[in-house]
Every structure is written in structure tokens, then in C-alpha cells.
Image 1 (cartoon, helix red, strand yellow):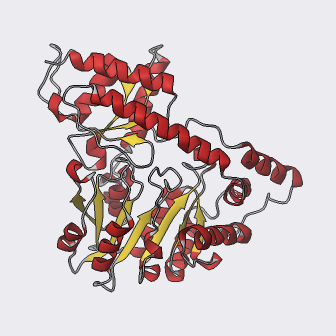
Image 2: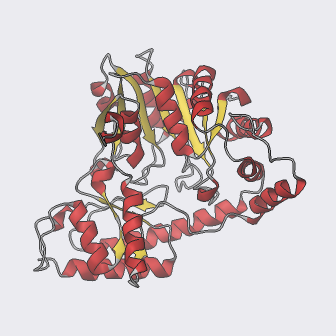
Image 3: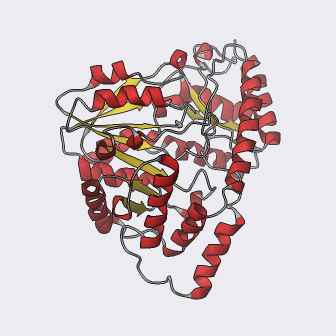
Length: 398
């Protein structure tokens, strides 16, 4: 009698949220845990964004239901941003603003997919891609990038994975969890493959576009022939330190935007009116606070990279964006501290939590058993201490 639907039983709890919950449990017991599990900026939302939200409350004009797809002025501002910065001719009609980029992706999956459809997921991948494909009753097809290739999937691998059932491809650049960034040349090669298959769509998750250390952010939709074949996902959480404001969006061909709007109208209706006023200030305002945050992330990346290199057996790429490392820690699988044997990434993360008091996320949640994800969206003091604890805990594994 007490049974959930098959679609819910087919998905798991978010591993990042689960590890954050375990870290809170330890903290509630008085244990000093350094939480490097959540992908959440440790900066405050810039003041001009907060001021715009306060002004909206004081004006008293934004207490009614907004349009499901978002306020017209915000959608127009987002379209202008993409025209100006990303060289993609989006208009307001192509934009749907949602309750975070996660809902944006869920809307697209429900609007686009039928049972039996396949979605190619570049791996390592953000934890929810796989779950949201299955929630839409489609089939995830995992294509694996390798550490040797900076965790990036090649166009050849994409071509080999496509079948008559393939409906979409999804990936992020800059990537969560690896920090890898696809170059324009690499995206052009993938686009060439996609354009051979008329019914294949690309879902390009660009939420970390501002946290990009390469100086080159290429939107898939900007490439020749790809405007009508690309659904761009973005949001305000990462680049503007607005995780709790819950504002994400898609920019897509109108038929996809209309379908997503229909899904959202039945599930949640519009995004919070006051959050949208903050988002408008973010997208039209001064980017200096964002640039200052990104420079801090760059410094932290180099700090963590050098500290990871001091850990025997740990292998890591040099991330070009986002704020994560995804080190291969499989050298320690099969080793023991005398009390337990580390069999996999889950064991490794629990060992680090219990013995090192550092919270990480198992790589299995991102499609790679050998790795764990470490977020460096934390202070330099905490990062130095966390990496020192990790190194000490690893030294006890024989």
C-alpha cells in the first residue's frame, strides 16, 4: 500500500545535498566540520542587487503573480545580454525564467522527452542530469570523459553514442564537477556531429559562464546552424552569489520555450517577483563585484591545486572554470586505517568526514567512481585547514 511511483523509485536523493546534511549532523554534535560539499558561493549577494529587491518591496508594485515565463523587462534584458555578450540573437519570447536552473532543466526534460527517448550525458556530469532524464521516463546514455583529456568528451565519442532514439545531449561548460571548459574548436566539432541529426537537441548548461578563467566563453547556440538546435541553461546563483534567490532561465527556440512555459505553468507558475527584480539589477548592473569574486576563485583554485599535488596518489586536472576540483583518489581504494577499508568514493568521503572532519561528495554521483568532488567556494583559511586535515587523514591509510 505504501509505495511510491516507479519514476520516483528510479531516482536517488541528491548526493550533494545528502553530504551537506551529514556535515550539518556532525556540526550539530559540536564537531568542527569544514564543508566542501555544496556548490555554493561563500560571498554575499552584491549590494546593488539587494537594494533593487528592497526597492521593489517598498514600491509595493510586485506583490501579484508575475507572468509564468518571467517579467517582460527581465526577459528582454536577458535577451540583450545574450545578443551583446554571447552573440546569440535571442529575444524575450525565447526566455523562460524559473525557480533556479534546476527547474529550468526539469521543464525542458518534461517538455522534450518521451518514454524510450535517449539523452546523451557527458560524464562527469552534474548530479541532477541523470535523475531528471529518468524522471521524464527517458534513458540516460553516459559518455565518459577522461582525466587525460581534462574530463572532456570528444566529438567522436558523441557520434558513436548517437542512435535513432537519441533526442538530446546535455553538458555543462564550465563544468560541474570538473571545472573543465570546452573551447570553441571543441564545441564546433560537436556541433558538426549534431547537425547531421535533424531531431537532436543540445542542452548547454552555462550557469558558470562568469567563473571562467580562460578568457573564452563560447555559447553553443552562437555556432553556425546551432541557434535552432540549442537550449541554453543559465541562472544567477553562481556568478552573482544568488543561490537562495532561486532564479534560473532557459534561452531556446520558441517552441521549446513555449513547451517549458506550459510545464512551469502547471508545476510552480512564475519565479518569485522580488527575486526577479534583483535578477534584473544583476543582469543590467555593474559586473565589478562578480569579477572580484572570480579573481578570488582563481586564487583559491591555485591554492587548492598546489595542496592537492602534495597528497601522494591523488591526481587532479587544472580546472579552467567553476569552483570545483574532481581529484582521482582511487589510489586509496583497498587501503585501511586499521579500522575500515576504503572500498570506493563513498567510503573515502565518509572516512574524510569522520576522521578528517571535511565534507566532500563521492564521484559516483557525478558518473565517476574513482573521484570525489571538492568545492573551493570557501575561505582560504578553511581551504588550507581542510586540505591539511585531508593530507593527515590520508597518511593513516596503509
